[in-house]
Length: 140
Image (cartoon, rainbow, N blue to C red; front, side, top):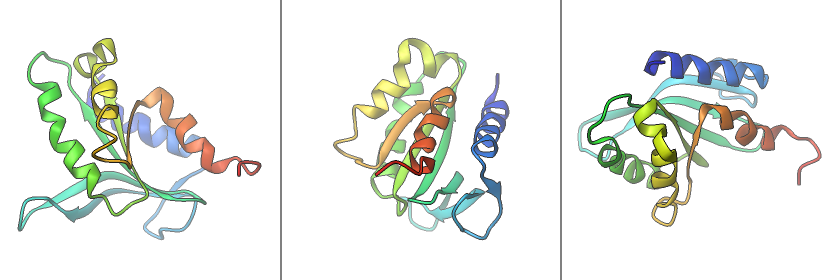
């Protein structure tokens, strides 16, 4: 697996849940590579996805790392970014053997929800269940 495959897998999950890619921002749509202001002045960041469900708008960011190194340290910026997102939720989809080892990245990021309440970290396998809660017509 690589980062491109992770992004393709996210797109596949969204399509399987009935979302279509468009810039309309209507419910049941998603956008890719949405530009927004960075925490650094005069810079921009890009959300890999912005998903418009019937109930909320979700920013999705993919984080991928296969090799040993400073993977967890690099995720600190992600917590700061999630704390200031204008969307209803900020989801980090983690992939790659280094980030998924011992559920390392998911646990690390979710442990900082006190600093970034909109933050949820998960794997691509869990993404469908996360989104499906917005699509269940019987849900309150």
